[in-house]
Image (cartoon, rainbow over all chains, first blue to last red; front, side):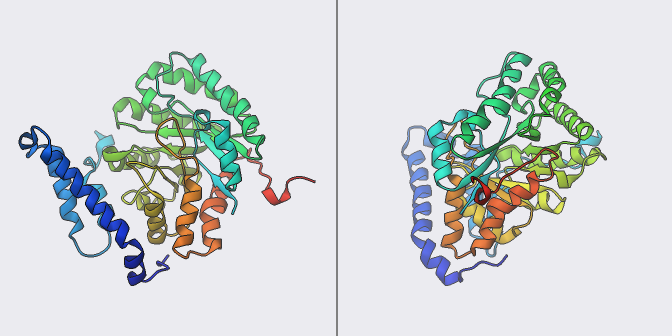
Length: 83
Length: 274
């Protein structure tokens, strides 16, 4: 099913909300940086996952949401039930 | 617009919630058996819960004009207790002739453990033996993709199970095609925090189409919103989707799936009364 709005319309309608979502993320990262012990979690697994998720947003083309979902997902092992 | 919420845990909600849902256009709901927030200690606890789902909740819903349907099982979280799970599975047939029971659910996986898999397979066997529909819970967050793949693998192990009689619930961007491409129905669960939002669900409809897909609120004892399907309708209207397409997702598709149950009886709202 195609989208019912043009890219220009979606951008204009969603811009402020998207801006807000980026600000929320920036503020959350700032909150971690301001907190005591922030230097000790630089290499924390969850920080790396967040950084990887942010990097995925810079990709071109549709499918970012599914890519981000897979990035945060456990690995599936093919043939797991045949063991 | 009338809508159906195909997955909402009304035992956790107030009568006021039923009334608000009815005022927003909810005409029917289905309520899968789920985790109560604590592990129940005996099969008798489940027998009482199933009585609540098949006797008391239909009356509470009917008082505001909502038709109530349900699904029975022991949920994946409590499946870690294999002995209790087997006692519950053996007891379920006592309730399968109740008029509002649609099938077995919500079965599935939570943490993708071996015990969960054992009990999931035994629920599938019960559903196959009794020719019941199946409603499947997929894990939330990082377990979801792996768990959904494992669930589909286990269903394929059982040649007596028809994917067209199964709904895979809580699909998101990375699992919706797994469900649809393998012939299942699927549900998107809308939450106010951490999980799928009405906007993302509308995106999924735009990308995956409107066949064999529906949306629900889950409305349970945690942060959740029993009016989320109405929010989803508003999101689709804001995008300019036509009313017929919206109605298909929030009303006709749930009816289409429920109609596969041998006991399902439904009175459309426009045919009620004198």
